[in-house]
Length: 103
Length: 356
Image (cartoon, rainbow over all chains, first blue to last red; front, side):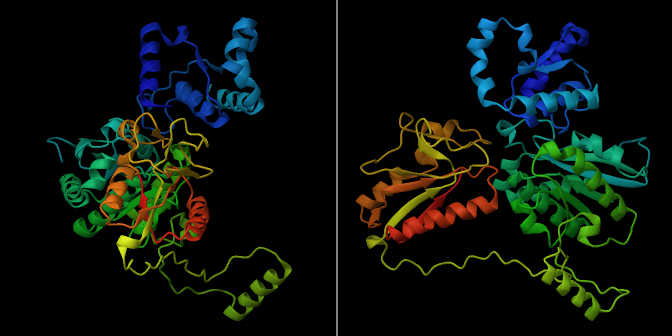
């Protein structure tokens, strides 16, 4: 997760409180989605960014995991195309794995 | 730099980082000149917890990768000076994973500190990092994964070897300790005599069962230079780049990192690459200047001029491009062989290779 995005998440959490922020990811690969999820839960695992040693414990989901909460027309328009080409099961498995490991 | 009133610790460790892990910034800060901070920074905060209790990171020296690699002599001198200021007992650099310039910096800094300050040094890298090949004979380089995603595994490995070195332990073989082989042989006693072990290995080999050789053959990767081109004014010269210059839109979809292919592109009649016609597909560096004028990476304009002036015979009308960023050595070799065959077939006399 790049430095600018880590900083944005940190500032948002500081401003609204960690109980009022949910992170939704759109990463195309399971590994990168998992690393991003780990970063916003447990801190930056690469120890390079603003979230180093900061465990915000934010709830985090991949967009593909919350399909049921989204207006079907908008999902169809914005996400469905990517849903066809991505490894959905692998992404969901990794997200679940990270949440179990760090939450 | 011992501050007034600072507790004297048993083993003083200094940590070297690049601008990224030093939390200064990405590529846009790669020209950062060397400076130091007291205490651990970034990965150092994880190292502290993994090192032996009596070891403390008293300071961190940070330098931008571009600054280091463009000013190796001065930068090394400056960094050695900053490290010395902390009066350390040990230097740890990185880990650099597969980041080439960072790996070279870690290797050069460790080697210089070991020589000038006469203290032990440890760094960590992926084995294909160019810094690994260059410095593994001189220093301990702990084997790591190829990206920062492997930090979790790299830190304990680095800390373990650093702690053992700091304690004055006898360091075992590369396989036992997890560092890259340094080409050093040591005599040891074995309970079984050599002939018995050799027969055992031979039997395993005959059965197709895996076995570990006691005498790995060195792998030499030396390319002997070709004879000089006799008549440059009659020579056909080709351009090949790992800098990712592709026709606008990247028609072959060459990946910005870990390229799985190379492209070949016709530049017949082309005298100048412009922002409208060419761009770079290369990730991991600031592409603005390459996109503004791709000749900066693939100098078609200059080559055409040399062609017109008769300094070279002609510029080959096909150029080849791939992305060097994170591309494995094995794949790079594969592309080089394929490109080489085609260029040989096209009766090219010389090739100019350019990178980012």
